[in-house]
Image 1 (cartoon, rainbow, N blue to C red):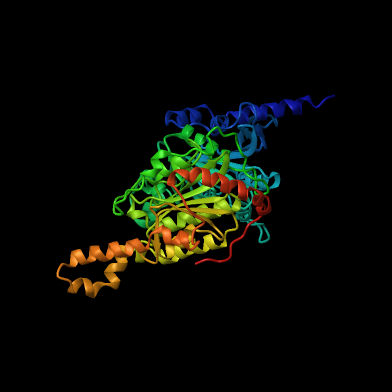
Image 2: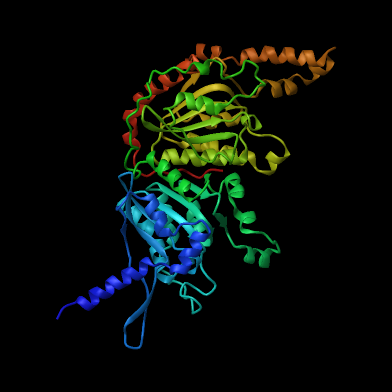
Length: 517
């Protein structure tokens, strides 16, 4: 007598589980240009590396003879795998079953994902398409009993994962409720422009509760969420989302107790880019392209921008300098002159927290005219969000290097210089409590109004005060570490990075911020 009947049933359950929601459900998924969760996992992971957990979790159905006739697998796929040779945890809803609304086993596997990432200290990747709880409960239309009063919060592990390992998420289709909450609880998020929507509640619920008749795209398509900061990036389709996640992870360590990987670099550390000598116009009122500066300074092709459509006056992302990961933050003077808006401040704060969590040195390219002004800025509580960014910078412990490219004014400028920052200035740099134009208008209003030619008098005063904001007096007073030829920016930053490298191991481990505004 053997255990062969039971072993055969295990094989049968595994086979049935691979069928997901059945041929018709899979065909419908494909007809809408969406991959199934298993296909997404295959697309993400190195070939043959997936080690599924709970492959036979689900609900069996037996006939009167006690024979297994069908099987409803858990509608969440979870397991270990490798991305470019590095071990990760990957999970995601199976939309071909119940539209991704969690079954009992599916919910357990979903909640288990963060616990695994924290336990094994490896990156967590979530590929989302599904809704949250159903009015009928996880078990269907039967009773939906809440957990006991002493049940641990499922969100504690979500927070702990973000404090321990890199978390990257993607919205592949419609994502609502609990999956939407998990989607944004990440260090990097991306959504498919062609197939995804992110919504707190669907159109039917919104119309019933709010009287608004909107489509899923109108409620939560990529044009909404890449501009409001719900997700970091938008990508053309599911495969492009996966490639963005792979690229993000290439900059990251496995966890907070490791430094980011350093890759071989054939971009010379002493490269001096000639274009930097003239990238900043001599006319202070003319905008320039900060992304050209970033491209010229960091390792060729290494800048990975995050949140381009949100808080657009601030440019944030990861890059490499001589093969080492660094955080890069610059101002985009082509949008609101680069001034810090409420959205820009929030974006900058998240960026600094990412760098502090994973011990990335921060390099800022400063062209900051100050906090955004005007009635809309006041309504958006810009000063509160901006001060939060300033205090976040003040509480970081990672090394900072700041390059004063052009303007550095007001309270907002303080957010661009961390504690004990290494500060370099270009000849085009100007700094002070206020930009010349605004300061002259306030301080010399009566003198300007009394002049025979007010416009000429204003220009005269602006030119006189602009000379006092030159970087040369700052360099003479050791208010900057050096005044440099812009072409020397990459070599100088590479030398700085070598100096701070021995400091990084001491920064590994948990990080914490005190309360901020």
